[in-house]
Image 1 (cartoon, helix red, strand yellow):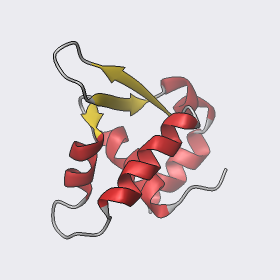
Image 2 (tube, helix red, strand yellow):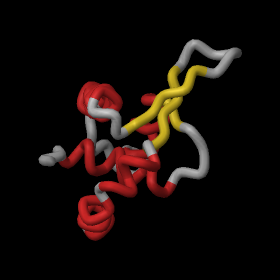
Image 3 (cartoon, rainbow, N blue to C red):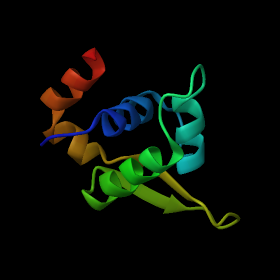
Image 4 (cartoon, helix red, strand yellow):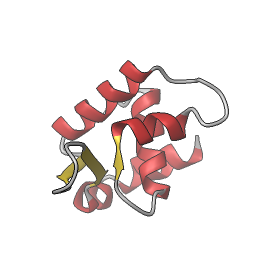
Length: 88
């Protein structure tokens, strides 16, 4: 499985996250120190990772936003890829 640098950054961020994050929060946290990723690239990475079933989405009752987290089964079955992402 080939992942873009933006997809890897999203996965790395969600591995460290304590809670669900929406696409805008992911974008803001990835660009906290310097603008490295465009909003479109982050949104597309999240959308593709969700489509690939790497991310699971949850919609809160009080909000229209979708919140994302990593699928634990995907993480368990791709542990070597996860370790490589964490090293970069």
